[in-house]
Image (cartoon, helix red, strand yellow):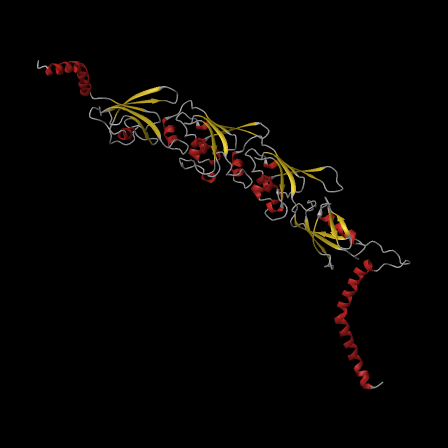
Length: 499
């Protein structure tokens, strides 16, 4: 062999290796595709050993399902099916009314009442004779409308058809969304014991009952408690045994509580100026009073109900206010409140949010001190104006409207002040006390004095101020009454010239 040929042999060998090395992945890829497709296209020879069923591999995407594979497929669901290395089959499919998916090459595949994992396994099993190693991934694109029921402590219990459009993420509606559709939970709802009854998947027996704690959703933001619904779910929200004031306030601000725009029909009885039934709407009352609890401005509460009823009377016992309400099953509940804590300590929990059908009872106090009456007079749930009567020797006697705790001398000035016959040194004050007795005080008055419990006391609703005449004015009036007839006779005689 020639020397130059020997020298060039290693170089040619390296060139061949480089050439095949670059094209080896392409060749292997082609062989793999043919290995996957040929078994379904080419019929085996009669003498050929029957092909063993390939091992099924499947994966499921559950990113939209916090509870895993719980969602059951049904007619109307739209899913995306990914078949590895076969783009001709990969795509979106809709579950037909008969509960099947119409797949290329293999035809109908039943997926009714199957989870995504079960559906992917069923599809992979059907493609096993066609594809060498079928790897199927199933994703839920859009959920079908589902029929669910809700009962218990919601404002509108019943059955609902919930669509993907009603959910926030466009896929599967959640439990809180259903509660919102039912116009929110009532104030006596027990969020810790919400029960969900659902149909089990194919192959399982009996219904599944799950207890959900929606309070954990409010307190800790635990989204696992906000279960995604599936067709046929039944939700029961029970009532609490007692009302927790702290939790009642938090519940009222939840996004699945009673809607603020929903009017509430309540009744206020007892020591208010206008007892009776009322319908409360969102927003402030007409008198525009400054609510003690601004955070619940849009939620009808105890103080707002009292404001609408004209405010408390001076006989009201605000330490023992009672709210009677009924659960959906008709069981009564009684909540006791102390609005004195609201005034003195700022305990906003006492300003209980109300619910439809509540009855508020404000009892009569056995005894109330003058100091407490003065403090209550300026509370937001007291009347903005009170009425007192000024009678006797003033320019405009009668009832006058003044602000609570207005001093006595200011009421006299509101009535126009003393006239020329008035005894300005003292007046009489008649008052109905909380215990039902009537008291009368003679008060030495000084129009220049400030509020003084002895000489210029603060007035209460329905007080009566009597301004007497001076002694000389009384004498003149008596003389005129006595001489009146004689004065008339003298006038007649003058006509005839007799006198």
